[in-house]
Image (cartoon, rainbow, N blue to C red; front, side):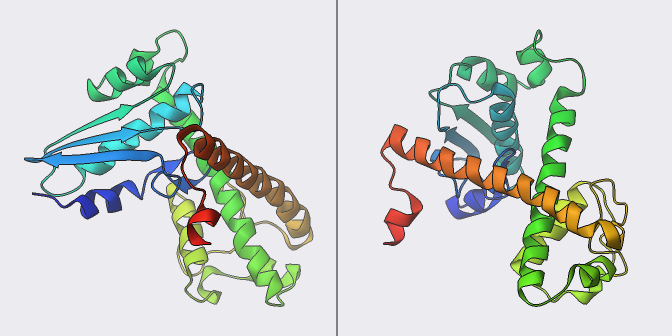
Length: 231
């Protein structure tokens, strides 16, 4: 039988698409049961009215993640306390897709365009975080413009940046330039400062939303916030 930890590890790879953080870190996983290869997962969100397309992505991704664990034969995921819980849960667990669950709210592609939009934002944000660290270590904008991926030492921050690049299908080879736009084009030296300034607004927006959602979830379900747990 698959272990609880193995399923949780798989779920840690599922991110809130808007907040760019794992649903496990955000406390969105409220319960997990495993019995005879069947996994039942329950999710919760900060508000009753979180966008159904965002919620659908997380429920669908959680199911796919659970099914990726060896020994898990069935995975049922329930989103609780959401105004569209019934449509989302039925759409995912009966494999109708978002287009089938909400036929009047989307056209084609079943949320792939939305997923790509959030992947681009995540990529830009992670690039800014990495470059901010490099600048703090003394690297100039001109140096960043001419860096290649092989010039950076291993780190968690660098690894997450590479993951976001790979999700967009961008070049992650050692010779690839560090600073590229979401289409994979190298940012010219004279444009790096402006590029990173825009990237900072994306990163601040994501972090602000994440902080707000943590507070809302904590209030809604009486969950101690991260700072309270580590105090």
